[in-house]
Image (tube, rainbow, N blue to C red; front, side, top):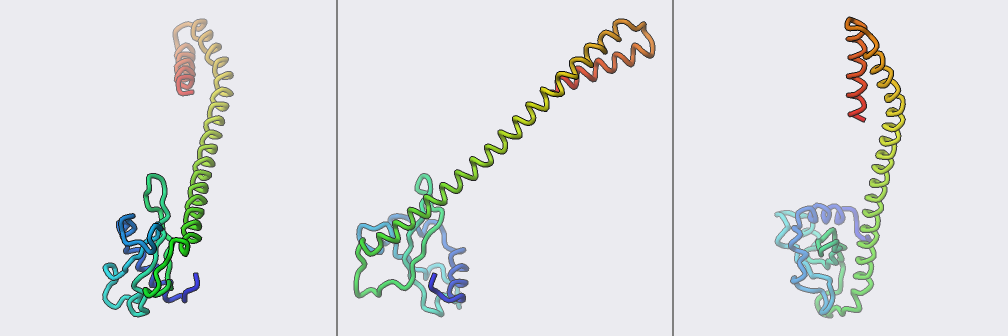
Length: 176
């Protein structure tokens, strides 16, 4: 937020090249005791990079950490105080709190998505179960009468047809 479109586009292109390892917790901190990092972008800049042209080669990073401390994203902070005055942990507390809230909202949205998907599959399972039960009842009647016909008919074309109905009805019952 608060930057022109060209800088935002150049930053977006640069972020695609940043490895997750640059967000390691043992990197240089923006302020003692904070979780925010001071990230030097020089290793990831390409010759003629727009970020270098606008002299935007250092920024603050608040990593969005997911489960098991994996990095799911980051808030990037630009336009920080120049190096003459050191940042205090209190300066970064609102941003770090925001990062925690953003990550919590992302996690909640992901869990809600999984819950919705789970409910959808449960509904499909119930539909399949009900359909199988509804087909099973008339199939039992068809199978019963086909077996009676098979026993009652003498061997011949009609008996073979009754055998085929019994065979297919049993096969359908096993599928259900």
